Amino acid sequence: MILTDERWRELLHTRATNPGAVRQAYATRKRRPRLLSDAGTLFLVAADHPARGALKVGEDPLAMADRRGLLERLLVALANPAVDGVLGTPDVVEELLLLGALHDKVVFGSMNRGGLDGADWEIDDRFTGYDARTLVDCGLDGGKMLLRLVDSDPGTVPTLQACADAVTELAAYGLAAMVEPLPYARSEGKLVLRSDPVSLARAVTVASGLGTTSAHTWLKLPPTDSAAVLGATTLPVVVLGGAPSGDPDAGLASWGRTLRHDVVRGLVVGRSLLYPPSGDVAGAVEAAAKVLEAAK
Image (tube, rainbow, N blue to C red; front, side, top):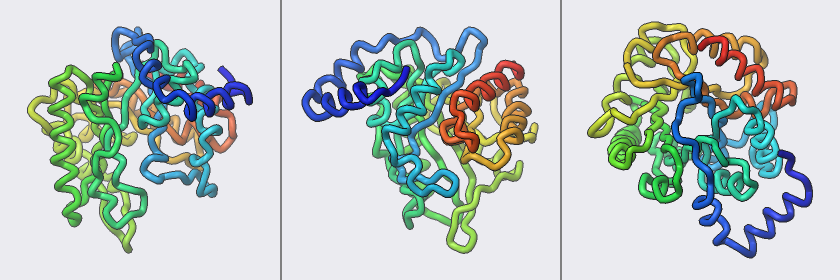
């Protein structure tokens, strides 16, 4: 599916003249009956970064601000049959719906994007996107929330509470709650991910206990070689991709090692696949799909 000039102009025209088309697109989307693929895996492309003001990829501070470019890359990724669907904020999801790209795909709505990238209040990550009731009404498959844990920042507390409430609400509707627990520390005023096994395992246990039930909770975690981290939960885990690195092969290898653990079910990757150093989105997606297939 290619985003031609004609299709782009049609999308802009619809946005300006027919807002009701969005509700119609939600209502008529063909849903697939289950989250997991026939192979028992889940492979989503993430595109919720812009709503948090996280636009930089590599040396380009505005890479993800180019909406047509982002949509073109998403269409390429979604065209690969190994990609089960997308994770995005309402604006991106609705544009893909209007382009007819989400039939028979899994769609997770991003819920909290208020912790703007680089803001003083970044850890107090308010829910500014989808809520549980809207996810149900729109016929989506689940909600995703970011939970950054910083022991020295009291902004962690309201985010913890909000995520717990969202887990409870999503479970009440029978929808999956994808929690991304990431332990951070402040160093010289900047947030730095704590990727050591002790910090990651602690984050896993905190996220696993959120809400009144864990029956519908999934975890989204960085790749890790630590059995202690992945052995800290029975909940299904998906591996996040993070920012593109200068060594895509090393990234693929780290995903592959994590994917081999029994608790890990798949990949949820955004910038690493949509903005690969080679510029070949289709090739990056295919390489990730092969790593997932080989691991399972």
